[in-house]
Image (cartoon, rainbow, N blue to C red; front, side, top):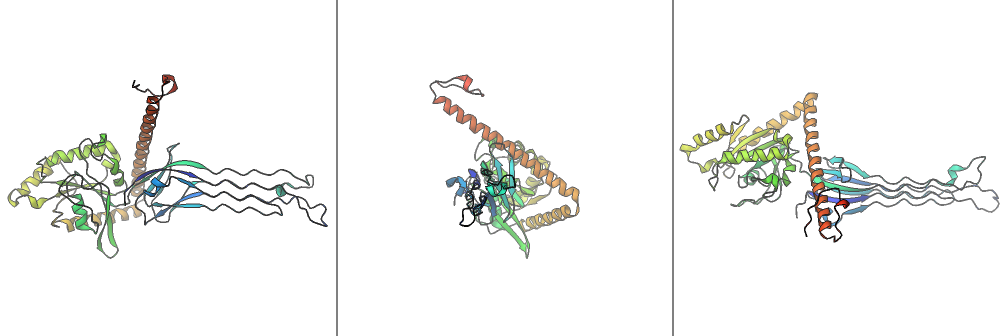
Length: 399
């Protein structure tokens, strides 16, 4: 199945049913009075998290979602039927953004979590509500409300505890294959990993965590080189980043320069993500001679001026991977306990999440503005009656 993590859809709630203006007409009841019933409320559109989904590809083919209208009221004080709510299943980890206002409507982070994205129209009231001693034949009713219509942007961010970060061919996919049941494609050429992969690392009964592998970065990713920074958003929900470095790259490039480049690209993408806890994982140590291995690794660590935890592993041989996952699991457990016991720690975590979401909204706003500008430039190119005053942005005219 194709992996799709962004989609634009239109949702429209149902209109309310109109109220009825009716009068009782029955034999032997000469003055029956008003008996117009109410209409039904329009159905709302509700998104629900579904653990069986891991892509937004369905929304590429079905972009319009409309809830049923409420039925109108009838005589004899019969009320119209309410429109059924439209329930749309989305993957867990979906962020919903209003395209027009760029408001983050909500974040679906749990299975079964519901998020109402379009409110159904209110019901109309029949004339039975307006009868009184001075108004015995009311001919007025309350009109029904229209359902809400919204243009939405869905962005999927995979739910993982740990994220792998590094250059192409650093061994991230091999690592996730080594410690979990995930089976991403592994090959001896760059950009083997084209989409994110998730793996569940199990250490025992009720002891596990989720690891995410994203396509590798290269220099200029922030400008769109390689696969760009498109998939880095899947690391924004993680608690810990593992920076995987190939200590013996086949192209004989400098591992330290590659690591510095990754950090620079990460800072350009999200300063908050760059400040997240990050551990250094020196991979492919088995490819270096034992005599020179330790000296090489010490030089790399010294040049990086790394102050956090450091692990020396060989993912393909399984050397050092058990120590790595055990340390990661202990750290995750300690963090969760700290947040449960210390309100300040929990507040700091929430603040970090909020900053990341603010940065995500800013990136979405910039991307939508760019797409709108490009669309307007394309319209200008096709318009023979071009006039600079018709546009609020500067456009380069191509004769």
